[in-house]
Length: 181
Length: 189
Image (cartoon, rainbow over all chains, first blue to last red; front, top):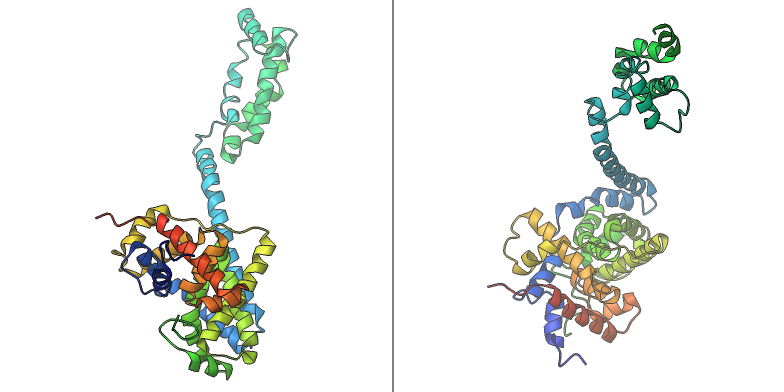
């Protein structure tokens, strides 16, 4: 059946028995049956322990599987770290574009705006849905974002650096404005 | 074909089999060192990355059933291959799939050249790549080639392990070789 096609039976048997190492395929098969690599013998102590226990020693087997599981977990953790570290580093260095970092600071600068009629109109255009009313209400809503986002910031230092003034300004936006003008 | 029952490789450890059955741990370690690499490669071709776990289960059963075993070293190799196969089938059943083995394509040219595998590490990588390539064959061809080439068993023994006629094993192995030859690059010079 295979007599007419390559490899014929004799050639095939020579390949399968490792007697042909002169052809590319013969060399490939020689690699497949190549010498034992150190990592292939790592289980010897475990197997010897099984042997001493007469084949009734799951503890070493469990230890082995635990080891491989630990390795798997390690790989998974490394993966998480690789994807997570970018965030961690970015936020630690402040390069993460957290809106909270920027909005609370400009927030104190907003109060001057409401008095001007033009800015009020602009605010209305920016947030027509939330602030259908007067331009005066537009400014507080804008500033109201400040404390929420600020609280979400993962940086304790960022929160404590200027927290009190920012919150005071934000929590009591109405009165100063009302009194100011 | 004129060879004895099984072409099991250079060493005949039939004495070690008998000694291990008498409780000689050193003899058992000799057997392990000779058989485990082949067993691991066979299992890697069958089930990929979980080969080590299944090999471990295989040795546990070998240790348990060794007192009842009877035969020489060639029989011992066939016996361990049979146990490994059953454990691998259990494993695949648990997984409900045939795991895939990734072939490092960039290794193919080096595999065929046979030139630069002097270091242990390079040889280990070449071996792994060769096994991965064999594992890429259709399942029956892959297993026939693995058992014959890696475990060093003859067609009759492989037939007993697989529950097939030796002729069917030969056909599967030859087809596997033919397919492998198309995957291995010809010599460039």
